[in-house]
Length: 468
Image 1 (cartoon, one colour):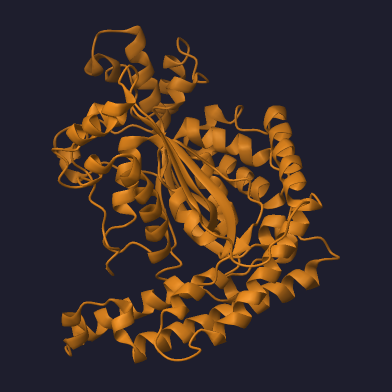
Image 2 (tube, rainbow, N blue to C red):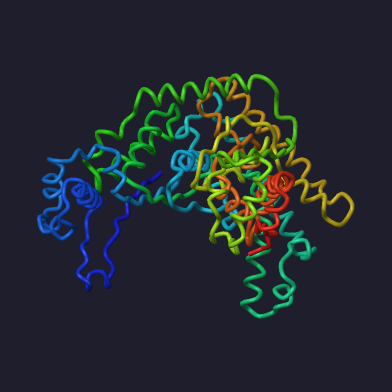
């Protein structure tokens, strides 16, 4: 595992225009000085020694406490995280809802045993290490078999892939490369559910120093070793760009007890019931309309709010922005939760207790030919078995339980936000290049919206998840 801070440098155009270039802390300090002066930026910059930015920061912070959260919010920091587990990447995104960034995609990259971490590094107990290693090896074997299965489908029944006819007919070198990429993505999309959640991935995040410190507090307070290790690596990188914040980037008793409380609750839930197969992804959606607007008028108001909405980035009126929405599903595969979790609004939640396993059997059953899905049945059984082991580990209060999950392991998932943000997410996650499974999940939520608000639903730009 590795964390690497990457600094920003001014562009040639900015240098030519004589614009200032400040370190993250000096930028925050300069912004903080605004609250104590109305002289403007030039007057503050005139007091800065460009050869000694740290001294300049200290001179300003004699008057302003850098520990104040609003000051730390003004220090932007980018850090790249190499070799974190997919489970830890999910956890980090859930703790950083305002971050910008990217994560290596299972839809475009074929993963292998080289991405499997050492069992000891992620806290697998000595007595379980052989069992865990064996289970993960079987899962990766299943993934490879699933990739081959779906690659064969893409080759033998290209119409199933929904790749545009003009691309299928294009025999040029470029056309063939595009076709190969789209067919490969089709296979990866359906095979990825057998990948272990413990596999290592890469994540890049850009957020304020305040958010990084908050993340460090959460990670360093976590009971599992991998989050704590990442917390220490982040502290080391923050020392390069925001050293005055390190006193705040430490484990906190409240977070330690908070994690323990969540683990106790999950253990109680896991003790009852079991993973017996694929769980139904039943959708729900609750809308709390604008205050002082009669419920009978909501659909009319929402229609008016969408009249100028001609693409997902376009205007949405205040009637929707003022409406609260809670939506989600009783069972979502972890692969799709990772994507849904990265939306940067509101609060996402799951108790992370496995309720089922999804292995794309529904996709296989739609194929031509008798028994076309039979070769996936055994793989599905393996996914159910491993997911049940994860649930059992949770019931036993095992800190390493998440690392027994697969990307097809299903969990409940809900998202609380506002109606305008829900509509944006629904349009994005059903649009061009959308993964077929989370497109279905958002379609199911939009179906509920249509039942509640039929007039306004006509203006929501739901896509068809066309291949990209």
